[in-house]
Length: 230
Ligand SMILES: [Zn+2]
Image (tube, rainbow, N blue to C red):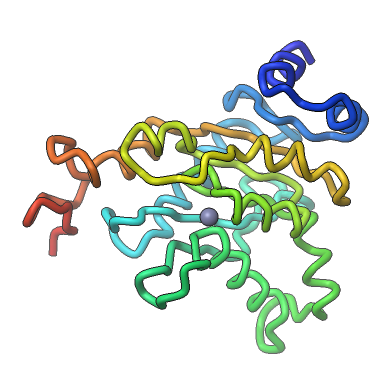
């Protein structure tokens, strides 16, 4: 509780939001090594690595990957529902960040008549409140808002927005904790766990604007840009 209060006061949250955080189960930030909702760090690390593996190759320029997992009713690691990665350049759709791609993919999988779940639209919408979204970088405000509208049970990210900015990435400078704190009127409070496994996620976002930074494993510099080895 001391850490929660410290984070809240540092971020200058309004007293009404503070009251909600205390009465609900939102945690703006917590030590990523903590066991949260009974899930140990080793399981968080496993799924963060799977989010990294959701990328189409080891070094896409926009290396943003997401996995959505069901930890409820699934002992052990949990059940993978779907994956997603940034599809802006592949589709021309500027909203298809990794998180949005994954939410779209999960909706398709959950409602497919030929799939394993065969949920109705209302059932699929409700199902998100039982799921956990892992993304290898902190969500932009668009995606963090989508996560709150979906009502995810948990949201776990790797590299932070401040680190992305430090590495040269243009960002909308609103961190997820702020989006979460300002969404206190929405139902289904989501738990937030940030900066998980950053020693493995940060390098994926560190080479694009730094010509001296080593390429991720399986890639090499060609024409100034990291390219995956054949
Ligand atoms: Zn986004």
